[in-house]
Image 1 (cartoon, rainbow, N blue to C red):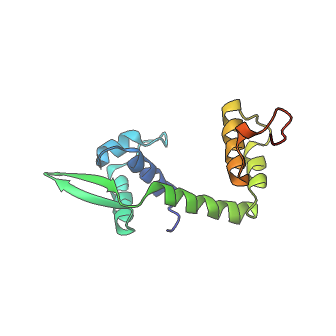
Image 2 (cartoon, one colour):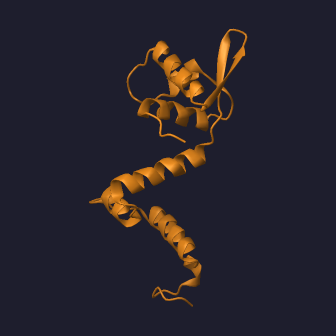
Image 3 (spheres, one colour):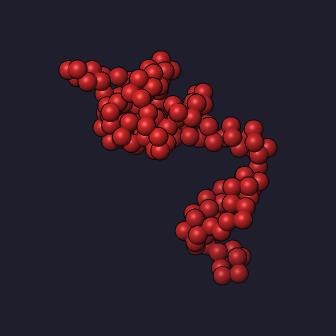
Length: 135
């Protein structure tokens, strides 16, 4: 699956997050770029996404509804892996350090990250004692 240009990716995130098929005007309302976007621009982006197999268009009366044809998680995984490989030499620790350099993670994010790391190691955060050793 090929990485999408930023504008198309923004549209796909909106479509993926929509629970039901979504119209062009609903997509325009949800766009977070902070600037107004011409309907023709959105239609062009939707046409490109349809050509690439990312969305399916369904005409109901005079209105087109768009639904994701590609799944979100595989796209995010593949795109994330490419970024990690190309920009950070496949090093998750270098990526995390660059991402949060100078910023402090909150406790919830630290716990989520620790749980992920424990899963990768095959241990549980709950199996550890207070000093970090396995019980």
